[in-house]
Image (cartoon, rainbow, N blue to C red; front, side):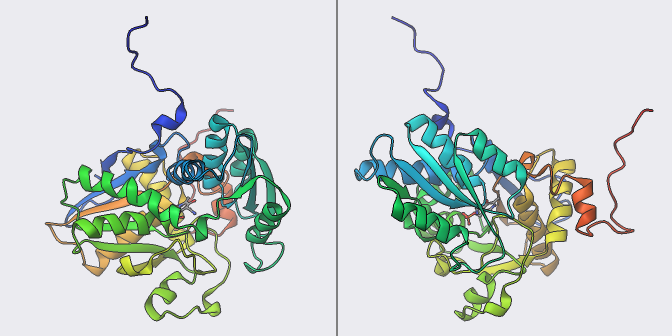
Length: 345
Ligand code: PMP
């Protein structure tokens, strides 16, 4: 008989329980204490591991998923990676419809995890038959023994964060959290986490981060779906051109918008100053903290938690590529490419 080993049965046992790490440099001079919930510590390197595991296990519990069935999803990349990872361990097939806006790295990563990938045009309406929503629905309707995760319209997306991310943050901050700042894409992360936190303390302020080119902030403020708000932007995974039912607008106090350019520079700054290698939307969240600080909303006694959704390694051909930054026009006389590489001839 072997002694009890200090090991994990498989990679899924490592999902969740991500660390809360103090921001030391980025928030220098801000009033209050600031911590990042660094979701890149999940084994699939993003917050989406939580919903992939939760939704698939819920489908198993309900007897909807049978061995060797196929799991289908629309995804900007992270959810797909997480679903592919869970599918490998649990023995399901995985088909993913992704937006052409997703980085080539992300798409190659999905293929590396055994998924079948359909790349769909990014700048078409959500109801266009070529959109990644419609492509996924079509495959699901034609394929017997398939389950469509449908993260934008699945209440379980909220529940996953209500059951895990919310309690973790409450426990890690010993109930002292005063503000949560998080991106809103499907809205699952912010809605589930906020719902749990507000049940513990209704005074906690919940601030969603939205993109210019997305309808979320205006919808929250006016309950009007304004198509004029929609135009292309570069940040992947943040903001939306539709209203997801996985967003509970009632638990969100306000939204704040950030630009592609500011978020890209701020992501690079977080990596260089905090030593936490973050993705594009983490840069967006940090950018939101800067803007909120300029508004003067933070006070000395505040404890602010920002959720950093994924890892910088997914953006090597985007935010961390000097060429990409230059091509977007993100470098000017004030902000230029890093001069830290020296080529020895
Ligand atoms: N950041 C990234 C990189 C994402 O992929 C997503 C998910 N689309 C989000 C943030 C937003 O998370 P949620 O969908 O839970 O709102």
